[in-house]
Image (tube, rainbow, N blue to C red; front, side, top):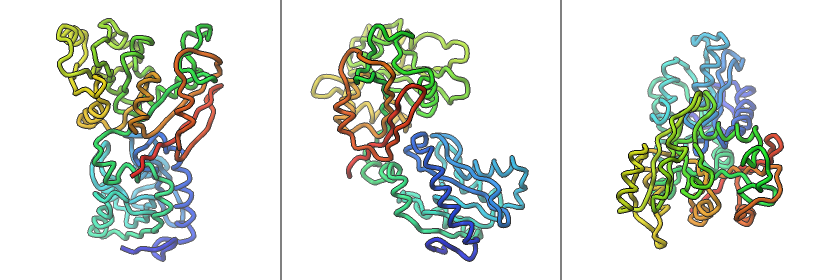
Length: 387
């Protein structure tokens, strides 16, 4: 393996150095959609030209290398003309939600590979490099680990030994609040019960399509009666809908149990309750269409959140969206079970209930982004757990 700092004689230095820097910057715009996966960009080179670029754009979707190759094909560049692929991170060598990019590179017959950083995950680090070299490819690593770690702190934390042993999914806390910090709007908010505007509601539909499960509490279920569905075609596969309900208070006629409407997709309903909870209620909810699962309780005789997240992990669920009220959100923050936040502040004053303003003000967010969505203000960021 040829390890260099910024340039290589095998791959044109006047192209590769600046190209890697551009790819690293451009892929950052997808950081909140791909986490806990890393931000990765790739480019196909033919002769001295960059003929296509690709990025990993959302959780569970094609990786950067595959998107770059697809873009090159769409541009009419034959695979025989692909002289090199440049990628900001060592290609994946094992199958996850998508096939390994290593195999796609080998199948395409690309002779040269330039890599911005070796995979920091000790379970996979260097594996793809070795396999490509064994296959006869020319591999050059532009070793800038500090840059990669700075730009991908969420991913590096995710693959750290302590986080791997934690056995819990990447959890995104999402909520909407009024300008005064309440999660419930005043009665005269208009347009139904929504705090957020239509642009933000559309964004949430996309976010739901980027997770494996949506987690909510029975309090939110009883007060808002949400569907937790995907109502926009093409936004992704409908996630599992998980209700935390220690004492089986979920109404059997809740909106969750209604058949999907036109252009609406819904995931299975799972109710997590205390082991040994009320038998008749248990059976009634199962008859309504729910899968009811009993878990151990905590010191307050409620379902343990640690057990909840362990159960989610054991089901193979790796990216979870928490859409809940202030109490369940606060409990997650107190137990360091939140990895990422998205907070919508609507153009609404007043409201009802508890504010999470003090919690939000106390968060130390990495890769923070403040942006606008229609008339709403949006805050996004990562909560990096201390080792």
